[in-house]
Length: 256
Image (cartoon, rainbow, N blue to C red):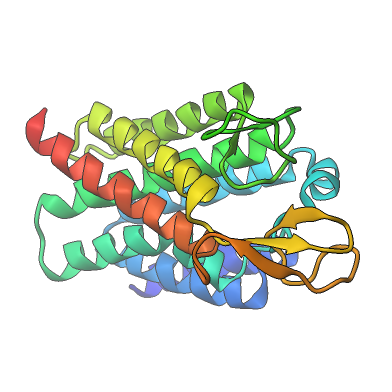
């Protein structure tokens, strides 16, 4: 536990200094890191692999992505506590469950949850660089950064993210089928896109006549709720994405 705490602190301090995490994000990151490492080194290593890969991809074309999605997305490049818990909360809960009540169920849940988060994150970070995303529901072109917008490049990256965690789980010698992990990851990412395009809260800037997720648009004008469920923001959608991945991986691990 102590060694895990030191390692987690080192990682989040480095992330804070590189402006990858906000202060609240660093605290949340340290917490999930400590819990995961306490469940076993493989749990901590998989979480670290996910974090490093997500951070690396977030730096890819960072300035260009910020310009493209700035008017749309609600949060900046520094991940806060809400974003950290949305992507790693289900995984760390599975790690805690495994620590307190050891069972083969928890690795399957954790693997699917992390694969879903990786798939969605990779798809977002890479897909944002692609041109002309289209709504997964209507097929119409939407602005870059719009929830529910997909691209061929982003979809390929999402598949790679799910396979990446699947390979990590196999290397860790977890008794979870590779296919269960990868398919759980893809299912979670798909759920994220569908929910993002339908139920996620969307706002509107009357001054710019543009759809956004921001409470205050990039022009400085306060926005109003336009559609979707109030309060059902991107963080909650990501949490559901992770949970769907966990459930699908668990069910498939019992069926394969």
